[in-house]
Image (tube, rainbow, N blue to C red; front, top):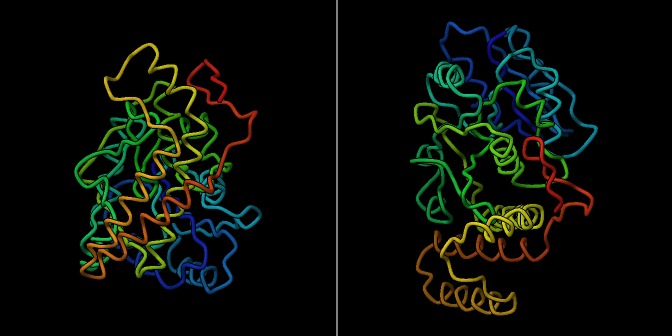
Length: 308
């Protein structure tokens, strides 16, 4: 088997059909399969996949309900997959035409690849204005390891042997597990390559509540990453000065952010700007709440264990 497409799903009966339709339309000479790892759905997700699998021999359902979280579902799906390459996409997005073929071509040349995220097809103007739309023209970068790039698991391919050697997604991270995986892969010596022909049409959460929740989740994930990799970032800054000004004390950062939020609220003119404010508020609260790693966890870049 060349390629296994792994989809983590939970209560996805309203969006998963569009993703499966897009995958069913793929035309490729690759030997490939689709593994849907159900993470404890209470709707018709399981029945939907079973019914489709009756007419699609390359589609399988995996029960991943034992542990809540997309990371666990993806890991279990990857363990049950038969492909030498793994491609991850989400149950609420839609892969582009030729996605499987393009992903396979990219994985022939690189062990870790990320495709392009397209934001217009599935989202209205207000939704697109509510937050940043990354990975459209290149890879992402964020603190604290700003010198390493990362990508979304909504459009990510990796050689199965590398994925398993890394231990898969870290289920200790509630959010931004894909950033963590990309960083660990690069710290172990792998290169993350951007493949713009591997396109996924992304679906944003709609409404003010959806923007707030997505911002909160991102903030919690960012806090987790900051705690886990902070020591590694500090070590690098000591040996390779970045030239950036020092980070302000936490109380001052909070005051600055509060001032920015108030200014943003005063400038609201349409629904997209209101959603953007909700996203920012959610991010701030999520970061404050955190999702911290356990104190005995280690980052393992290659042969070197770095305590955090």
